[in-house]
Image (cartoon, rainbow, N blue to C red; front, side, top):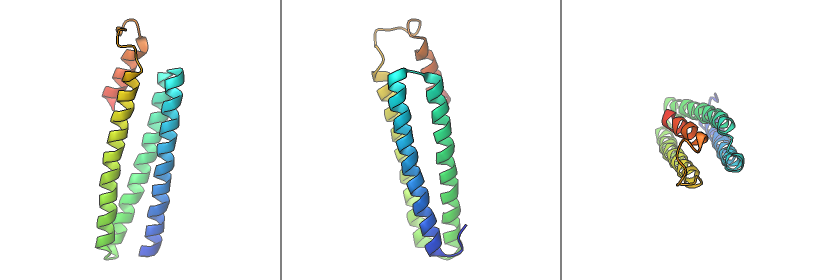
Length: 127
């Protein structure tokens, strides 16, 4: 990583931009899923995005630690707060996506009539 605080903050900004792009991808995959109901493709897409979010989070954790090493504890604390807020946001987006998905289903269909329903439930429970 970068060796000075200013460079670390630039790296942090870059990672936040990557995170914003990942949210855009997630919205795109969900919209596509609502259209085609292809559970397997949607699951694969979500796994890919989850890996991106994890890599971004890991990079930001390194930035936070380096800022602490540089005695920039206040900046590191701000980044920690942003990370905590981003974690909460991702949880809310996940819940919202799941609820939207369930609202699109016909409430009168049983799981035997809608085989993808079991796949979706299993996918949601695995997360």
